Image (tube, rainbow, N blue to C red; front, side):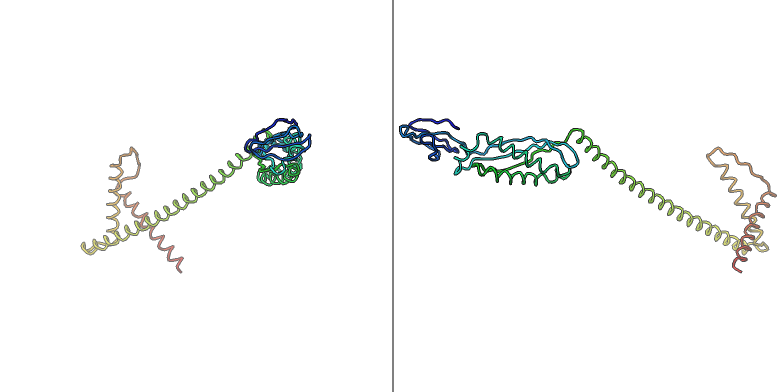
Length: 292
């Protein structure tokens, strides 16, 4: 930028700005287009600056508040302010190094005060702080900072592995909780179903026994009315003998190969009837005693 072009004319490209000197001293800025110079009067085109937006990537290594080393990749977009191009031409020899130095300074002042999780959540705030500081400093040198972006935050590989393991453990824990709740609901529903089935089974058995009792009572009454001279006891003995032989028949017709040894004979049938009758009478006597 310090070289002078002592020519009669010069052309400044679009999106550029020329710096014109007279006898080595700044005279004026040259807009894009063709310009004529008087070399005999010491006038020349000292240099041309581009006004396009430029990008500078900066990689910074620093430490967070919880002692985790991270690398921040920052991207800064900047350009020369056309009206102040002479400041940019004469004041700074290497603007990239100047911008990089200020980015390092601001980032290393902010990040050590933030935990790693907060850094990920508030990287926009860090970028905003860096942008404000750069604008304040670089505007004095004829530069405008267009954008400041933190494009990546790279923790140490061991830290990234630990973070992934923590995340995986939390998800496994959550999955275990959901699985336990599902198993709990399944067991509760199963218990409710079993209780309902037992209740309905008990109701069915009670109704079955009630039907058997009603049927026996009706049979005894019908038999006593149709066959004169018979008592209820004799009718009950006859029904029990009939039920006994039906049971023996069902055991014989069963498809399962099961051997059942039971006493058989008219006397044994009478004994079974007496036992059932005595049991029913004892139960009835006990019920009357409780009522009294």
